[in-house]
Image (cartoon, rainbow, N blue to C red; front, side):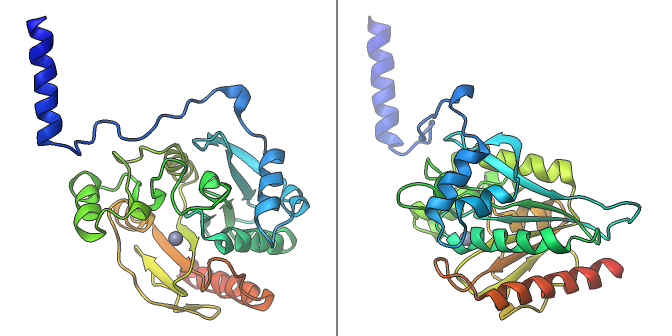
Length: 290
Ligand SMILES: [Zn+2]
């Protein structure tokens, strides 16, 4: 009894001294296989959410499941454009969208680029598309940047500086902004673990990540950056603890091109979508033929 009392007092003292001690601050969400959503379900939701992608546009892509799931059991979907015949691709290019769930255009443009590739894939590159990397953030009633339990996935990558800097940066530099919470520990989120697995398995030469709404192109890592993609010009934003640019560009020494579209909720024009794509392919050709 006395022991219990002492333990209780010690706990109270701890809570008083460290009111924000991060035990396991996030709600746990249980996985049960029968609850997992199919790709058809996911396409129904995407078609209901995005003005520029209909249910049939989504179904027509014949997306595959990567085998990983979001917190709310939505599949992480993949589209592969593999090498063709005897042609050796000039590189392995990973393209991902929607890591921030309220940047709608970053998902819609992925679908438009896949539609271009469906017609024009020539085996020049081996492409690996992940069009919707934060499905729970996008497909909530009110879309949000973070995943279902409030973690900014683009601050949750297991970068070498995460342990030392991520929570410190969040506290001192963002004033504990909810939108930029890096999570309780590196790769705490299943969506990030799924992405890390995709990167490990696919071994991309270059990673392209779509965001909005800064209207620019950012670049981290080895090769020369593209000076422009359509009407988006190179302007370096810098890196953050736990960001994909930091993880890919610095830790893995793999180029990461961040495409920041001009608007989160307004699509670029069809001609811009196609010029951005052409500029991207031209830059990749220059880089990979060096
Ligand atoms: Zn973003």
